[in-house]
Structure formats: C-alpha cells, structure tokens
Length: 457
Image (cartoon, rainbow, N blue to C red; front, side, top):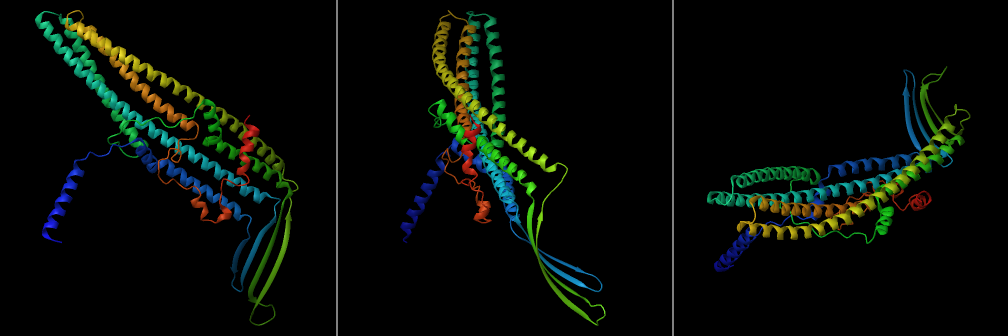
C-alpha cells in the first residue's frame, strides 16, 4: 500500500472515530430495561434452582420402579463373606407409576409458578421505569415552577418599589417561592428513591431513559381478557397441576391396603474353615424369592391416610376455585383502572388547556394592574396541578396496561417479543433421558383442562 493510500485510510478512520464519539449514547428503552431485569433477577435464579431440585424428585420416583443392587461384605477373625443382593418391586398395584405421575405434576406446577415470578419481575421493572420517568417529569415541572415564581417575585418587588403594590404581594411571592423550592427538593428525593428501586428491580442504575413507548397490545374486550386469563394465568395452571397431583395422591393412598409384591435374588460367597477339616473352603450360594407383604392391621393408619388424601384433594379444588375467582377479579379491576386512567388522561389534557389559557389571561391582566400577584400565583398553581394530574394519569395508564397483561398471563419475555433467549425449563431434566422428562403434554397434563371445566364453573 502506498504512503498516500495509508494516510488516506488513517484520516478516514480518525474521521469515523470522531464522528462516533460525537454521537450521543442511545437512550435506554423499556424493552432494554425488561431484558436487564430478566437477566439480572436473583429471584428468578433462585426459583430456577428450586425447579431443578424438584426435577430430581421425578428421577428419584422413577428409581423406586427399578431394581436395587447392593453389595455387602462382612468379616470376622476366621471367616469372610461377600453378598450381592438384587431387589425389585414386582407389583405395587400402580403406586409407583402414580407416584411418578404425581411428582411430574408437582414439577409442572412449579414451572407455572416460575412463569408467575417472571411476570412479577417484569412488572416491577415496568413500575420502576415509570417511576423514574414520572419523577424526572415532576422535577422538570418543579424547576419551571421555581423559575416562574422567581420572575413573579422580581415583578412584585419592582411594582412595590414603584408603589403599584404592597409589601403583602412581595411576601406572598416569597412564601410561594420557598414552598416551590421545598417541593423541588422533595421531587429530587423521590427521584433518588426511584433510582434505588430501579437498581433493585433491574440490577443496575438507570441511564438516560427513552420516553414511554406506546401501550402494549391489549385484549379487545373484558370477556376476551377473562378468557385469556383462564387459559394462560400461571397461578391457575399451577392450581390445576396441584389438583391433579392431589388426586393421584388419593389413588396412591387407596391402594396402600393391597400391599407390595417384591422379588429378591442374592448370591453369597463365604470363605471360612470347615468343622473337622483342615484348611479353609470357599462356599457359594444363589437364592431367589418372592414376597407379598400385605398390611392387615396398622391401627387405622391406612384409613386415616385415605381420608387425609381426600381432604387434601378437596382443599386443592377449593384453591383452584379461589384462584380462578381472584384472577377474574384482578382482570376486571385492571380493566376498570385502564378505563379510568384513559378518562383521567383525556380530562387532564382539557384541564391543562383551560388552565394555561386562564393563567395567560390573569398574567396579562396583572401587567395592566387589574390583577394582584396572588391572582397570578393562584392561576399558575392551577396550571401546575393540571400538569401534575396529567403526569399521574399517564403513569397510571401505563401501569394499568401492564398490570392487565400480567393478570392475563401475557407479561412474559416471549409474549412481549423481547428477542432474547429464555430459560429452558426442560433442559435440565432432559439430561436424565426422555423417560424422566416432565413434559407438559403428558397424559396427566392433558387432563388439566378437564379439571378446570369440572371444578371451575
């Protein structure tokens, strides 16, 4: 490469570097915040670990259906013995299979609970983002209010010096200025608190934030929202799996009285002296047997266990009823809050327009001597209150929207299309082989809708 070409290339690189350095950093969007909250959540990490621990229960339940092989050795001064024993449950009247199925339902219930925790983490991040935005807007209004009152105070002092007003007008303006500065300090404190909440919810302090995005896609009607929640809300899905697990527990309890048929094969090797003979000899023996152990009397324990299982199943059914009712109430309440927030926002816009027109008119009349400083400050306070009301209404609208999504089970990384890999709940259990995986489309899992229809009227 020629020297001229090298100089040209270096100058181009320096130009690009200077241009990129001059560009402002990209402001953080709500999607960025949600992604960070999902990736940094200690709560999600904790419950993922608990889910993996519950996955191990499936492996342990399946192990009860498989042979158990034990190697036992013993030795004394004169002899040594080695024994290999294989034991296996041959017939347990379905308890082992039911136990595996019940454990799988518990895994599926915990997976649903993990989705609920994911929703809670994302909603807290949304609330933190909205709080930062709200606090920043309030600070802007407070700063503008301080500057405006300072102007009015200067005007009041000038009119007082000219004899066009009294000392009272000046004192009123001074009092309002002190109150405005105090409110500004409080707003700055609220922003500091919001930053700490943001750090806890997201895992880091906020940078420059973009304006709130458009509202997310919401259900078209209340009936649609309720129907979506009945199918997708994690707590309902969790309660369905818990009902099924309790029903399986009842079936297990009813078969306890039939006992267990087990088989055993043992191979023994003994090295010991023989009575009346010189030296030592090694003897081997192979035994096999079948045992049927039936409980005849246990002081009422089996009957109590059956009654206990029935009571637990009834309790889980009642919990499913309550969860469905609470979910429907939450959806309806969030739908109402959404409508109220929209109405408040529209009314606040009209209030701001009217208050601004009144303020401009009062200030013009004050310049002509037809209004006092107190009239101007009161009109400015009306405008300020209207602007605060709009900020609150806009924040309430955002929170109501995402709260509605959460109550319908749609506030997840996948539903929001955040475009990041999510935690694979089956990746851990798949390492144990297909037979031990607790997939949702299991025979028991396919019965969940029937359970909801049966008990969810």
